[in-house]
Structures are given as structure tokens and as C-alpha cells.
Length: 88
Image (cartoon, rainbow, N blue to C red):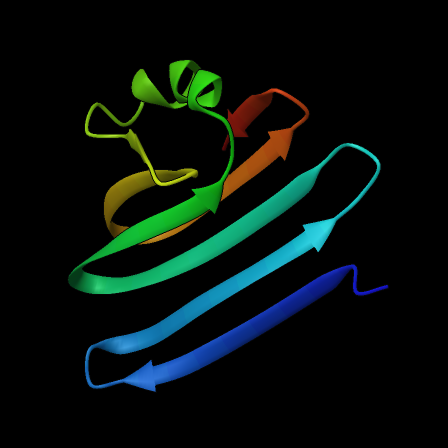
């Protein structure tokens, strides 16, 4: 059973990185977005999980079975537990 994966891409703007790791607590996703760019992150989750994200990400929305959030440059971590999302 696959429990983790990661990938990086060297774009003309800098490194784009994405990874996930499955554990007993849930699935933790990590993202790195290069300076002066934005990214749309799509995570599997329930509509109820939006409550946890909406405080930090007012544009977070639920679409087609996914939590969708747009972020600026930086590093992000989201952990999806059963029925909840934690951000760091």
C-alpha cells in the first residue's frame, strides 16, 4: 500500500513542490509555491471540512468532492483527519 509520495518541478519562477503522507491521524499534504506566484490547491475532503479552513483562507470552497483553496508564494501544510482539516 502506498503511504507517501512527493514531487518537485523546477519552473522558471522557482521550485514547485508537493507531497503527501498517510498516517493513522489522516493524510498530511505539503506544498511549496515559488515567490511572486499563486497556486490552486485541491484536496479530497468533505464539505464540512471547510469550516476549519475558512478562517485562514476566506476563498476556500468545496467543489466536486474537493476542498479548493488558492494560495500565494510560501510553504503550506494541511492535514485532513476524519471529518476535519488542520492547517499549519
